[in-house]
Image (cartoon, rainbow, N blue to C red; front, side):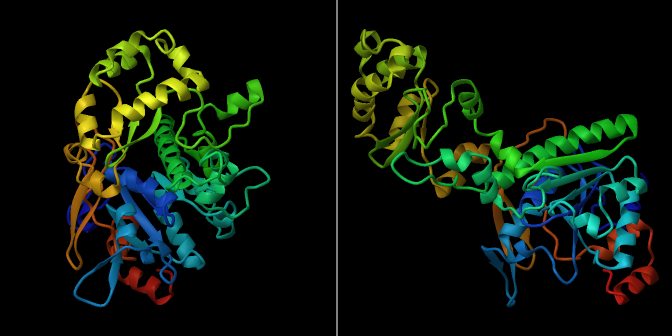
Amino acid sequence: MTIDEGALPPGGLPEGALRGIVVLDITRVVAGPFCSMLLADLGATVIKIENPRDPDYARDFPPMLHGTGDTGFSAFFAQFNRNKLGLTIDLATAEGTELLKKLVRRADVLVENFRPGTMDKLGVGYEVLRQENPRLVYTAISGYGQTGPYRRRPAYDNSAQATGGLWSMNGFPDRPPARVGTIIGDLSATLYAVIGTLAALRHAESTGEGQLVDVSQQDSVLSLTENAVVSYTVEGNVPSPLGNEHPFVKPYELYPCRDGFVFFGGYTDKFWRISCELFGSPELAEDPEIDTMAKRFVPAVYERRVRPVLHEWFADKTKRELEEIAGDAVPLSAVKDIGEVVEDPQIAARDMVVDVEYPEFGELRMFGSPIKLGATPAQPRGLAPKAGEHTAAVLRAFAGLDEQDIAALRAKGAI
């Protein structure tokens, strides 16, 4: 594909493993924007397309960066839309749909997260766009997928947690089930969408054939339920909330200490023996009632013999003291709040909190990229665009339009 880099904003095409890949991002909130953001961090040129009169409503999500003026800029939006070019198109207009088709001819990927059928109603669904570009990878993220009886149901993250089984398993036995404390339905769908998109891109590059990548939040959540499906299909067991316990591995949970809580997972015979030495109880490694993993897995034995030992080991020590004792020898981790995580030396060493300067609003600290590539590292320090910020530049570079063409589209309300 030939791109007029001279017409792009300063910097031209981004660097990275996906340099030269063009992604049209017609998404909102998190599941779609996060997917295209990950591709952008890896070097793809991502064009965020919003309705000029109804842009992504995550632009109003807190927290807000505030500058010298009255307006603010959403840090939430900035984090999930960094490294993108901003373009506005009204797909409800004939000129808008024709413009999108023109861009599709020059694109490699289109990502959308509307309810199935929405893009078809606008006249720019997959079957239409594949005629414009047979090698297009069309990634659709939705609550329930493009097929099946639920396909048209509206859905949020909680919908996926509820219908994917995860909500029913989370929480404590004596209380109602609890949602996972983050938008795991959105985030898991994002990650599967990226994987599917990259796989489809590889196929398109080798064959010239694009395809539909269909990712459902419900499907994604179900795949995160560990052994729940086989536990039900093999033994008829329906998993229920276990609090901080594992279904069968012990010890492997949360334990209180002097200034909070730690996770301890020294359940194997090797780790148990080392732990007994480190915490001054070497004789317990040879105790015939708890000297093997199988014995420690027995719930009654664990409750009577193992859990009290762990409370004795941990109760009078701080999180830091316990981590220092465990060191590199056994799996013990402090349960840290986000403030502690942001300041964690391991997080700093991995460049997982990055600083970005927004000229009008000041510094924003946000999460970095967990994908570490040796030769073509991710670039997570880009800015998120204002709505339509790069409309003219994108249309010149990717659609070959001149100023007169662009002015005519603005006059018609198409951009």
